[in-house]
Image (cartoon, rainbow, N blue to C red; front, side, top):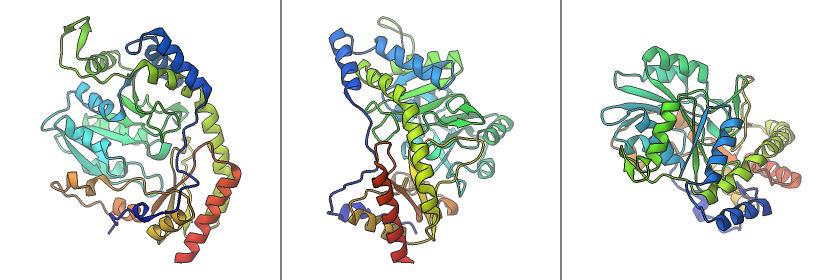
Length: 375
């Protein structure tokens, strides 16, 4: 059984090497200052420019900024007419909001297994879990590597259901030469501080469908089609111009951040692969990996390794405790042996773009010592 004990809670050693560290400087400060001095802090040009640039980078027709990834996912379901009585297939090895956002719109999440190497949805298991109530499949691009979109799309097409993307961790990732975010009917990208680029909180929904884009814009702004003209039920799910201004600067940094992470992967991968019992992230040849997370698979002793790293001041975690085992879903039990086994053996180590080469080497050495101690 996967432990529910948080080994981080017992640690008292100050963290020297953190899992995430946003990359920002005076450019973001200047962008915020410009918005503040403009006097237009919401529904303004900074949001529109961020949306335009994001859509261009990800080769989609529309990008719609949202307050956060959870409401962005809910908007994607609502825009497809998903609600009570419907089922949405999701992985369990993901942040909880992939599933709870389904519940927020009144539908039921159906948890499916993941691939043992990429940790993305297993298409064969998805096919087994389809029912007449299934309305959508949500492909989570775990850690920044695309799910098997061609296979999942074929399954969705055959079943007459919608394929959606949870691309929260995958800004700039590609699949078969095209950016993620334009493969499904719509996709969500998150900008929380652990992501490769951040606005603090915030998200972007992308789509090629103009009608869907219009629905998203209504949903995020009280269903308002004209000033104080509310034609449908909506919410206040807007991103502020302050956040958008930060995001626009961050977007210009993304290429450099991804290049740094690719180089850092090349630096540490051989050393990690040489440690008995450690498997570095698998990268499929038809896609690129953005390494928002750098997740290792261990043969044994995961919790001991976590504790040992923390004792050296190195932050590491399980990403993610399986959603189907969370208390909120205990009333609808399901067994996922593959996911549950992986959850006992996965560990994500620091890999943000501001790590110095010496820090990367220190993390690798610490992993080696910790793994050797439990073998």
